[in-house]
Amino acid sequence: MPGADGQPGAPLLAALRARIARDGAISVEAFMRACLTDPEHGTWRREGVIGSGGDFITAPEISQAFGELIGLWCAVAWQGMGRPVPVRLVELGPGRGTLMRDALRAVRLVPGFLEAVTVHLVEISRALREEQRRVLGADRPIAGQQPQGQSPPPSLPGQGEGGPAAATLWHETVQDVPPGPAIVVANEFLDALPIRQLVFAGGDWHERVVEADATGGLRFGVGARVRDRLPAAPPPAEGDILELRPAEAELLAALARRSAPLYALFIDYGPAEAAYGDTLQAVRRHRWVDPLAHPGTADITAHVQFARLADSARAAGLAVDGPLPQGELLGRLGIAERAARLMATNPALAGDIEAGVQRLVSPTGMGSLFKAMAVRTPGLPPVPGFG
Ligand code: SAH
Image (cartoon, rainbow, N blue to C red; front, side, top):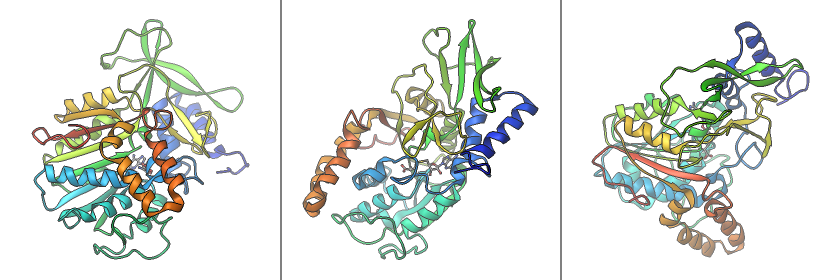
């Protein structure tokens, strides 16, 4: 978004430089948080971030089979819990609402599930909340009715018709979701939570910081020595970068504190085994850009370290399944069969359907960089795809 002087990101850059001049260098975490959630200039305050015309595209936007299979995964999870009524179907960071729309349509064939569900969308972006409301037809909270108005590109026919309306509530954080049994899904949510970066220099870990440079921009620097207890990791070499995402442990602890049956499915990109390295990245209009240039105008994310996510889940008292490569989970959930059915019903679009599914499962697409990991209340059976 062009700033007052025509330079993208100029207002937030000026605000950050002023803050640094006043308070000193800021942590990478504070920088990332400002880029994402600054009340005036943060990414999530802007409109049109997700989708082919936005900054980046995600699995549910690539193929409706993705949301449909996750919906069926949720229905089986509900059965594994003993079919509680009501059950909270929670999505963290629902984007345009596409995954939830496709999930709710697919589960219409599962007896009793839709009637049991209340939908809870944890979303900080006002613009995306509006989009979700439109896409889900959520102003019409009667199951089984056709949504009206300007929905996004409709999903293809093939399984169940009509709008997936179910009672839907929006929340600022997961802590606000009412108590009771819950099934939580989060696709590309964790990568959008701020990370800390530590850099190994002179035999110690230091906070990696962002400071002002002499030419009106920002640059990385090495900040104060860190005394926190750090997760187990291989011996570091000079210059190694360790990424920590404190919000993950907080999220898992909040889920565990619900003390009601819970399944949660996290899908995101990052390594299965903890690894050193700088994974901070910024994408604008589907292109990589320098994360420090034009703050707030690009989608800034970092890999999820699944080994640490699993450790945080276990520390919170939850059982862990996976991680698995996304392609493997989708294969086990039946994406090939689902795609074949969609192609048979929509022969003119068979090529696009095939290409979309390939992108989700292929190791050269999203099939292996993306991983899926499930957590559950101990004692619940493992869910399909992970058992
Ligand atoms: N799951 C969607 C969107 C992924 S983008 C998809 O797969 O298309 C990340 C989403 O998380 C957006 O909806 C964004 O607004 C939301 N989000 C980011 N940080 C958040 C936070 N701290 N709390 C709640 N929602 C957040």
